[in-house]
Length: 206
Image 1 (cartoon, one colour):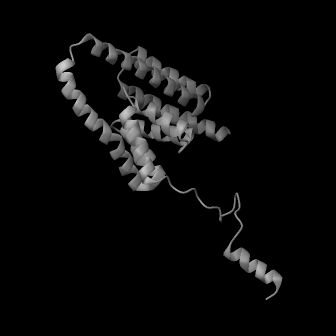
Image 2 (image 1 turned 90 degrees about the vertical axis):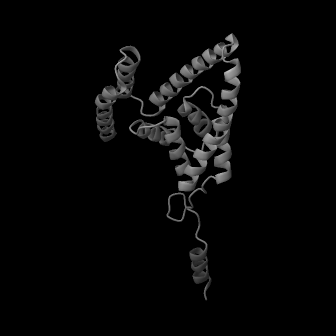
């Protein structure tokens, strides 16, 4: 066998990695133990609701397991499905990280810690719920949640799909729901198709 044939045979057995070629290996999925630990920590430390904001901070910003584009695409899709945004996002992120097993492990991890904590706090609140300091703590947590929700919305508007159309939809949503107090369902029925249409128009222009 000549040297050239031997070299070609070696390339067929051990092909050189290519940045754009079909031989490039996909990144290994995140392990189930890491997914469970991450979501267990989230469930035990995400005080005050707005799980979407906590998920973005921990999974996207801190760990970098998914990027902003994927997170906000999943978040937007979840808005059209009934149920808790945090639960829907948890299942979607877990599925992206490790398939169906990742979705199940993420959901169990997210809910296991809070379930035990709520039982303990419920028993304690029955005896101490009337104290002023308890109400002050709850008021402080509520203010923090409002700020976190606002920060997540601004981040999504700026990094998700920046542009006048996006800011217009955001402004119309805030005006309709936050200021005018209109029901969420009619606002969604009107603004969701409009937003999708504007996104399609902007995509074709690029």
